[in-house]
Amino acid sequence: MPALVQKTPMPGLRLSAGITLTMLSIVVLLPIGALLLKGASFGPGNVWEVVNRERVWTALLLSFRLSVFAALFNLVFGVLLAWVLVRYDFPGRRLVDAAVDLPFALPTAVAGIALTTLYAPNGAFGQLAAQIGWKIAYTQWGILLALIFVGLPFVTRTVQPVIEEIDREVEEASATLGASRPHTLRHVILPMLTPAALTGFALALARAVGEYGSVIFIAGNIPLKTEIAPLLIVIQLEEFNYDAAAAIGIAMLLISFAMLLAINIIQIVSRRKMGHV
Amino acid sequence: MTISITGLTKSFDATQVLRGIDLKVEDGELLALLGPSGSGKTTLLRIIAGLEWPDAGQLVVAGQDWLALPAQKRRIGFVFQHYALFPHMTVRDNIAFGLTVRPRSERPAPAQIDATVDNLLNLLQIPHLADRFPGQLSGGQRQRVALGRALAIQPAVLLLDEPFGALDAAIRRDLRRWLREVHEKTGSTTIFVTHDQEEAFELADRVVVMGDGQISQIGTADEIHDHPASAFVAQFMGASITLPVTLRGGRAEAPGLDARELMTCAEADGPGQLHLRPDSIALESDPASPWVLTRKDSNGTDLRLVLTGPDDSQIDVDLPRRGAPALVVGGHFRLRPLWGAMFSDAGPVAPAAPIRLSA
Image 1 (cartoon, rainbow over the protein chains, first blue to last red):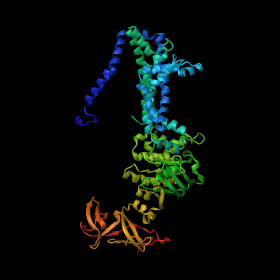
Image 2: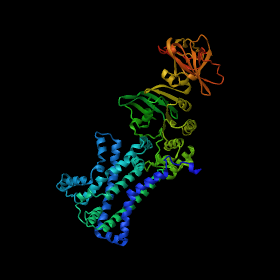
Image 3: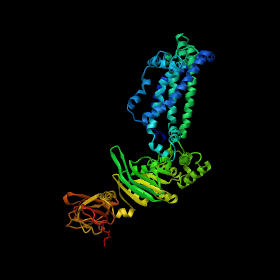
Image 4: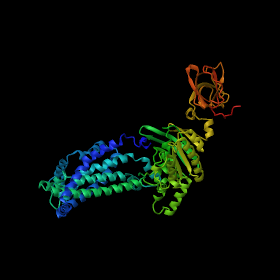
């Protein structure tokens, strides 16, 4: 009897599960597996030795610290941008809406060169910043700028549909119960946006950690100062030092995995709080 | 709290939604705003709540000018059609929201808030749902939570927008009786909006019938039922049949019509219209009548009849199947309406004559 009970409208669970798992393996698991295998053949002791050097630690710390800052900035600014795009009608709104996706579409090298041109000490904005003694390109500010640029669409695009679905009546209900606008925002609106905003934050963070193309143009790549971890991997590759490249790669993989896992756990908890299981 | 509304108008872009509303609501009254969609009833409710602002007019509640107060300061309980519960809060937190949101100096102690919420949960008959989230509740349960949330702040005025619109018939009947009881216990001035005349008449002390941004009639269920003030009100009361008649001495006359059972009206003599409901017309066999039974269907309890009359006009008549006279398709029948409203093309006689019951 149980065999006759169809639990899902999808036909052929085994077939569809087989296809998705195969695809996932080829696209995601195989390359990661190969990386780990490379590390295993190199030996954990050797991996640790490669990573445990000042230049590598500094680059890893720089990469992850700036990525977190960029993702945090995008979290705040992205939610704000999504709110403005959904709730306000102004001339050119559709244009701005479309422009949000540009960082997705633009080759990252183009973005990097454009940002460098603008923010270099002799560039349009760089000159202004230089007047107050603020150097942007070829410093960590420049890296942060590039990471913010490439990560911007993630939060906006994940939060936007959620804001669109918020019932206006929920805000009105809050007002009739005596809540001020800031209170409504803080205790009613933001909690409703939290799960989506966290997803966007995780995506922006992941993107920033892995970003290479735009950063190398604006960073200046000074060892121990503006050298990011992905660049260090490329440098090892150019010296045909594949084992060391894999070692740094594994270090990045583990840190990224730990961070994304943490975000996911926060997300599950916050979804539980909304009554979803 | 008495509510006094004078000369209220409101337009959205080019459409005028309210065209001069005058209304007085007594303290502790349960009032229904009844009308078809687009009649402006919800806009009127939202203006009282402070969610919308009129273009002109006055809104005074208990001697206070409410148009000078934002929604937050009016202390109203508003129940939205789709409940608008906070999805990330438990039922308990939803109900307590109006209390916890108050500034520290006015906020009751936590133990007192808990006690208030417990009381309400009991009144609403949902104490077992206190720790659920809105997403885990049925429509009727959400409606109760929404009402509880509105009542928690002990509102000066309770406003409900189509409170039972999204619920099925059985639950609706239950909740209706229960809302009446809650109103009697709390005694707060209550206004609700509905498009369902049965709901309005059953629940409210007085009903305000609205059409096209104006008040068409205010009265008790009996008053509106017996004397609809206009053809619009009559039609909204279910009088879907309009017959051309001649009025003489407050009575309607037409071939094949026997209007003896109708009350006389204070309308001028001459041509006019008689508005009838399909379910309050009796049929009597009469070979001289121009009305011919042309169709006869049954839905089990009622017969649905179609009669064709002068100029090929057709009317629907619903009769209970049990005890219906033997009706043969093709037979001629006289219409004997049991309820109806008539209006002369020349308007009412002036001065308005007292309305007498027919002998």
